[in-house]
Amino acid sequence: MDTKENLAQIASKRIAEISSGTTFRIDNLEDDELLHKYQEQLADIRRDGTDKIQELRQKIVAAKRNPLLGNAERKTFIANCRNAITEAKEHASAHAAEERRLTKDALLYADTIARNYTRRVNASANARAVELKAAYEDKLNEIQAESVERLAAAATKAEQESIRYECRTASYEAKQRYQTELNRCLDAKKLALAERIQENRMLRNGRTDIIENLELNIKTYIYGCTPSRFFLDYGLNIAIFIFFAACIIIAPLTGAGNILSLPNIFTVLELSSTRIFYALGAAGLILIAGTDLSVGRMVAMGSVIAGIILHPGRNIVTMFGLGPWDFSKMATFPRLVIALLLPVFFCTLFSAASGLCSTRLRIHPFISTLSTQLVIYGLLFFGTEGSAVGSIDSTLKDLIGGRWELGILNGELVTFPKLIIPAAIAIAATWFVWNKTTFGKNIYAVGGNAQAAEVCGISVFAVTMGIFIMAGILYGCGSFLEAFRANASAGTGQGYEMDAIAACVAGGMSLNGGKGKVRGIARGVIMFTGLTYCLTFLNIDTNIQFVCKGLLIITAVALDSIKNMQRR
Image (cartoon, rainbow, N blue to C red; front, side):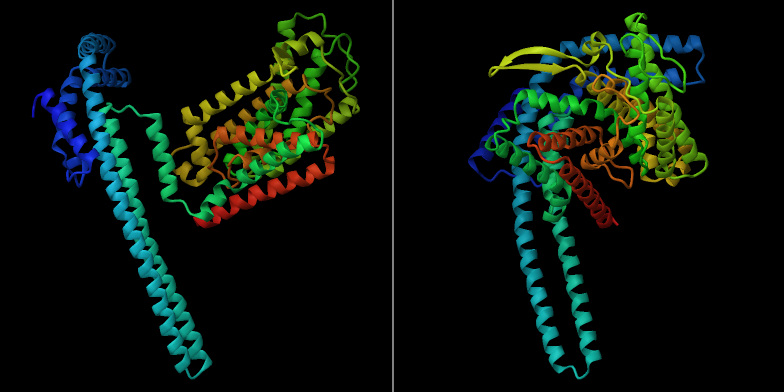
């Protein structure tokens, strides 16, 4: 059985036995001798190839960080390692075809026997679950019958109350025992599935498979899912999906048109593009159990500044009696850079000031950002006297905030909004910071438990200030792009802070901190914007739209609160 040909023959025979339903079976994947032979042969091939490459690369990294090595000694060691890596690559290349063939055969065999093993474990666990449920129901009936007899014989009201209490206690203990045993059945299913996928990963030398990962996530959720948990996790999304489905059906019937057309979808994405920046900025504060009420005023301040710089010809607005100015004679690139950097600078300045108040003075972000909102609001109205800046240069507007023509679809011109591109970049950058940097990991640590994070050596002050500064940068970029969508004024962005917070909560973020994903925030923004657009498309009164938004917010927060109470 040591030769590769014998391995393949035996594997084919066993796969045929399993497929025909004969008696071949294993009680544990680790006990299969043939699978061990496959693993040994793959290990022999990889030992001087891919495994050695990985080992040498780790040694190079360790050598670069080792302060005990001199420069000459370090260079010599690294050079030797790189030479060895070259030899290992040659060995890996020479045996690549053999490794691929052996891996393919091993995966086919391992997956077949593992699926057979998993099916038997699942069948046994399901049968055990049925037995446990029947035993639990019998126990409840026994407890109930016994309590009825005792109540009939009780002489006093106090004795009856004591018997009822004992009955409730016994029922609760029976339920706990039943749930514990049921969880063991579920754990057996999870373990069998995890063993199969882990074995396949080992055969691939640590490489994962998208389909297997998806299967693992879905089945793990199903095994531990209950109706109440499913409702708490997806109830809001299901309700919004039903709302969108109803709008899609109702819109043609009322003569409003097809709401699911490509131009309408692009319009929703364009409206969401700037709001993505505000939601991502506010999400950082929500992640540490805070909030930001200054978003709308930040947007107004940044868009007014950008609008003044990008206005064609002489401005119609003065700031604190200064101006009006004329930036139209500047070159396009420096003008755009200044129009972007100034909003980012001022938004970051005010956001950092709020952060200092929250970190140094222990003021809750709710109060510090509310104060910032009022300060900016007053300064803007006092400085501009409430006047709108006016439209920006049409050439610049088309350059940044215009659309690309894609063609004619169903007799309708389809255009792609350019603002979607910077929004996608913001999502990617925020995802990278949150998931691939030490700062991002520290954000989650501080949000989960600030005291524990501080004990572990994480600077809560630095992390919190970083979050506020990052929020200011996002607000500044978003407000710059907002100037391309509307005539900026001190009233621009009214209510955007509520929309940003609601989008975050609708996207799965917890107001208690420590939980949230960038993709959830993006999904929440698109859902929330789509909801508003659908109501507008159906000519629903604006006041009713506020009612719908309020119901959405309170529902999302209520579901989040219930989930947190259940965890406790």
